[in-house]
Image 1: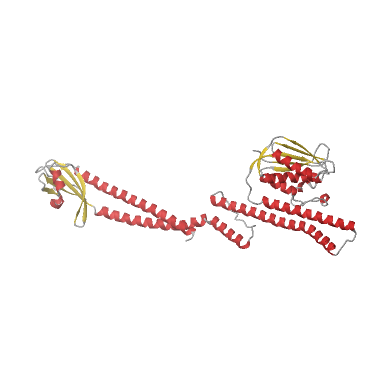
Image 2: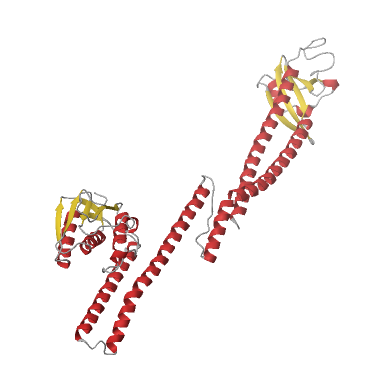
Length: 440
């Protein structure tokens, strides 16, 4: 059973229950009001003046009730009918309860009686020397109630039919966003086209669901595009060292070059290309790790991590001096990733620093500042320094993968921070990178 059909049936069932309850309540109210009108009529008939031309039980010249729709009779204290409308009497209506009222043993009362196939409303009221009994046939009331029942049944049937039609229309309108969402999901599943959108409008729950789904598709599309670009860029970057390695190995296989100096240079080039590939693979692993499930954060002492990284960089770049100024600074983060980001900043600064130069490193309030005194970054290159695999023309000859600064940016954003490039204004040249991380 479809959801739309369930909505239609539930709507019809709810309206049916409401209509039936309302109809029953209405029927009972109508029945009560009609019976009350009869009782009021009987009470009014019993309240008329009583004449006594020939005895204590004569009311008018010949009638007891003086109303065409009411039959009345007078019962004496012994329970005998002594007068009735039109000279008639109905002894069968004189029950024990009626005799008790005539004898003064019981108060007035209303009752419903059935004689043959006819129903009557009865009112018995004590009078001097007996009681007056007034009877009105309920056939008109029963007919009116029967007509009311038919009308209410028709009303219930019409309400259910209308509710079914409206339920179907409402279900169709209400579930239109779900239908569009389902169609889009099926289309995306079939074609793998992440550019499809639900394009939901409105502020209700279903519209927000469609908007969230569109946002999810956008994120997936961006992620897929990024992955494809990463694979394409990685393939391009790997192609150059692999080609160089293959060419040099083929030369060595043929016994070339024969000159020992040239052969040593060729071996050195092999080692350089292997190191480049190792660095590239390591950076690719780091980029892939950033897209995995986030590792648990912990409280870290930033100045301690910086000193550990500086010790390692000093060993790798013995001709560069690292000047560190730090103050206690606590952050929340993943140590291996924060250390990798700092390593990349220091490695980048050391590569572009001339021998004997100083790299200034400062740590305070969750921020690391790294300043080198190298050639700096050209103004036209500054917007792209954090792009993956991007390298300026002046840096093509230097070792690296083009992923270092992009990894720094990924680490900063995953830690709720940022990284920026600044041009020093003290006239000393070089570049300054500021890595800001979220403090405790």
